[in-house]
Length: 288
Length: 224
Image (cartoon, rainbow over all chains, first blue to last red):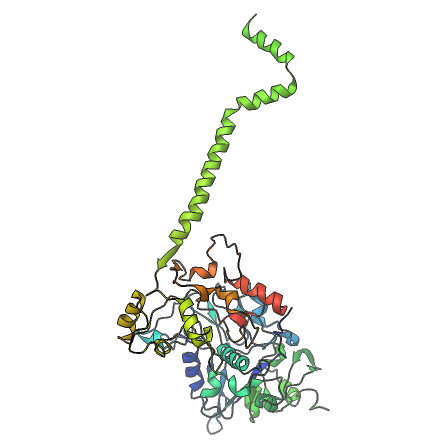
């Protein structure tokens, strides 16, 4: 071993402010164009369309005049798996090692040339973040010239998903190499396409391990396992922040922020009366 | 005495070793089989090594001959044309614009290749469609910044061979099935590697990474 290739590990993550999100769909559009996602003749056919980033509509279920609406953008959650050890649901089931967990970045990869399309990962993903290519992508004539050369296009018969715009990380790392500081990628040098496209700045992206990064300051991830469930690591110490299906122990790196209690409640399924016991529990130190 | 009796008498007089030797001598069928097998093996072996590469790879000539030796001599070093940009990306094969920093108006030199360059590309302001020997498949991300002086301090030759000494551009060979350059698999059809630049498959990247960094890297380190 003569070269040092191990930087202090990053843990890239995202926090989305659902009170700022207007549901405009800019994140979805920017994601598709950034990542060469093919569009379909009928995008309303959800069994066929591919949306790495997808905006869901939430409602509090009350009738007028108490109706409230919120929108929830959902990229790949880049789960750390139980105990945050890298055993993401999709990674642990892939028979082809076409998806792995990058311990240096915390990002779950998807290697299109390796995938043979068994779709086991799609079944394992609790967030429906993975999509199958039922057809080869078809671009209107001339449009293939507008494809990004930094992202490999996919073919029929394989699975794809959000990569946290990994090619932007690769570019940022190249830049860091050039400037002689390969271990410190600047916050502004690596931002995902959806983050930069959001007109209301609802999305904040950065290194969850770095206290100087905005995402860390908002989320304040708890480094200790949740005393109620040891599989859960990195629970937010901010009472307004939650993760989707957090109690599963998948440890997603995508956090959501909302002032509204009914929105936070929609992050998981709760039995009657369960929510009231859980809602005030936020990480170890906030209890202290 | 009948013939049979004679044989029986003779048999009893010769040793066991001679008997076996006689048996092998008589067994002419086996010998022919072995010879046939060897011939078939040689034919198939020769066919696969000589004919198969010709079937698998199509040959393409470069638009015109490029003299690396001369250009390195005139321009001083590799970085004059192949350099890192300030954002850390690699310039790769220079565009016409870079060529025109020296090749302005008057042709430099009197070779036929210079005539092709000036008439076909410079005059028409058309980019030269070079075939890139080292071009990796589409799914591969390679960081020059991470490997050369700014990173692992590797020498250009380690991957590209002694390219600065070449005076002619060799024929580009393209895999008919995958469309990849032959340099990825390597010239040797069995994948035997003598020099570090002979082959540039994923295993070669992973091997070096494992030796140099202690880990072959996660998928996304080299994939996109």
